[in-house]
Image 1 (tube, rainbow, N blue to C red):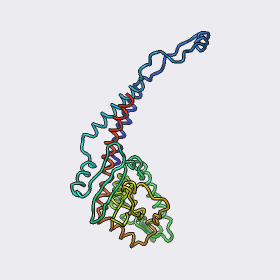
Image 2: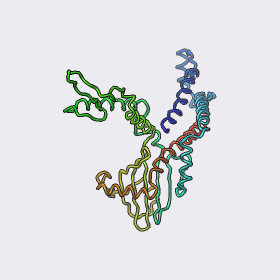
Image 3: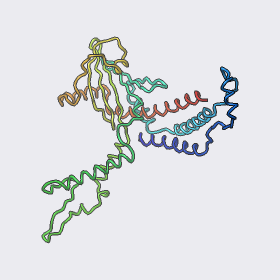
Image 4: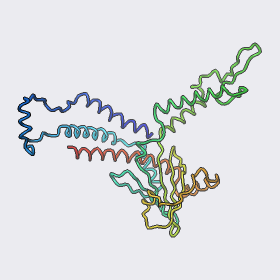
Length: 319
């Protein structure tokens, strides 16, 4: 999954960096002892500019070599086809009505399609890959355990000894001893329903949320701009704004809001039926589960390509 691949890319970078740090010799200028009288004389008759030859930029060369090593590592990792690569290809094979605008060296990606008399533009950015909104790895595991402990504590503190799914099914025998139901003698980790819930949680924690902006334009009717977040294969709408007709490009309409324009209420404040029908409105236009799953995969693939390009450009500059 995505976060695993991100960690796999991070690990060789860190390991290689540590290995190089322990073996390299930092550049330090040689210290020389200069008599005080000579120093004062030099200050008095110091020329306006120095005529001595410049030393090679050893730090720049060392940085270039390190970047070359990073490029080699990332190129090797890039040779094998990942799930994200195959998922991106499958999406375009099955949804050929979408066209993509993806410029090398830029962080934004644009999808376009036509639907009846509408022109639909979808924009997202690879920035979300490096700024995930959900916890990953050990943090997620710790949070999951904390939630389990909180839930057990809450259940044990319920008045009247009410039983819930996670509560211990117990009571007192006629002799005053506590009796435990057979299913409660099984360790929590071995219970099928709890294990399934944990597996589902771990699967969901692999993905990362991504911000998505959608623009739907109609002739002489202006446009609707919808702000969404895709997370775990599902879109959630955060806002819907109607924009008047203008000669502004779709990308500018997505990025900039005209001053003094009413942008509508928070989506969750709308009537529930209105919310549901707006979600269906987007679904029939291809803003659906397939697209919600595709966008994080595409961000994953593009981020790796852009990272390699960035390494090469910085290496060329510092050498």
